[in-house]
Length: 113
Length: 113
Figure 1 (cartoon, rainbow over the protein chains, first blue to last red):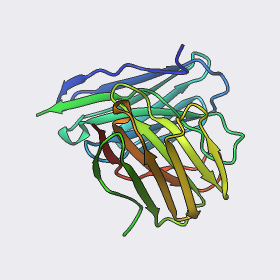
Figure 2 (cartoon, chains in turn blue, orange):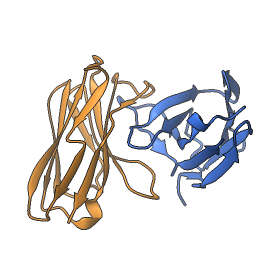
Figure 3 (cartoon, each protein chain N blue to C red):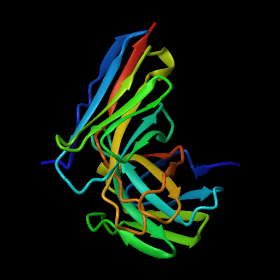
């Protein structure tokens, strides 16, 4: 079983739609949760970073963590064509002198005008 | 130059060649990482240099050899690669703690013929 499961999509939505991206994980030691966005021909860039269960909002983006269910989500409101990218969830257990990230497979999102 | 840079951006090599990938970070970080990104697979951490300590993924073949001469520069030396090594190789940097954000370069797209 993979430590982090993420539906690879692809996901295609019309402009203005609400997008829901999800990851599940099996390792209860994961304490820190991230969403990265990766545009074509670019490296991943951090979008959201959360620690505790609950919601964190940043503009049109909301990250949700449910540690009891081992489930994290990223919601994108009023999606735009510029949101078209691959979205990667990532997790850390902590306790190391470096960032030992475990990534999901990534979900390819296309927002069409 | 700002952020994390990588050269070359694209590389085609035969199985008997030797080549090197270069990464440079301009963020004052003291940890650097090499990742492999293959189609339909999660990002795979290959090597980490954190505070001059090297950490490696034991599943990485010996035909990949990292070098970190100082905290700003990182190399990945390649020799006698296989076609299945074709992938996007990403460099990242962060402060040397478990939870600091990692900043990625644009990657080197490698094709092994």
